[in-house]
Image 1 (cartoon, rainbow, N blue to C red):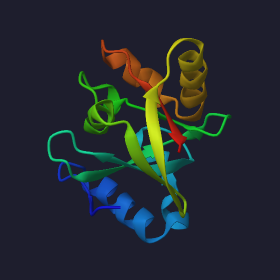
Image 2 (image 1 turned 30 degrees about the vertical axis):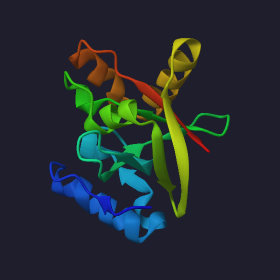
Image 3 (image 1 turned 90 degrees about the vertical axis):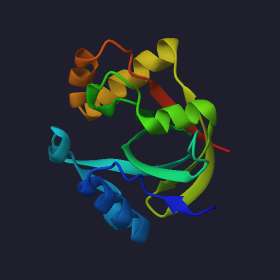
Image 4 (image 1 turned 120 degrees about the vertical axis):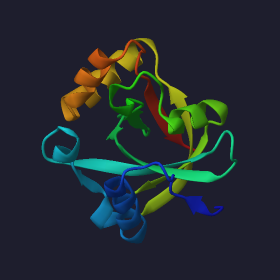
Length: 151
């Protein structure tokens, strides 16, 4: 894989999380949800997308849950901001991504869940990290539910 870049605009605590995860997947896999208004330790993955403008490999940590059929679900919430997160815009431009989950790394393809699948996965994610519901209430955009499937 090409050189991975940690986006400059991330808060220091997220940059630290990425660094720990890259060095030791076991240590970085769980994230303290109280930092974002949730509760407990939650599972995270590292998503690497190709920058739609820069062409660089950009890495982002995200809360995830298995979809139940071999894929993984993440939410493009950006804390309820009016615009989509950069990583989501990147995967809209190029759905080929790279994942690190604990110490396993693999190529994957991302897509947006729709219909009944979206409803089921949104509930799964809100049940896991309740602040997502509040984020949706903060914005007029429909927060995307993203499914990432290994290739």
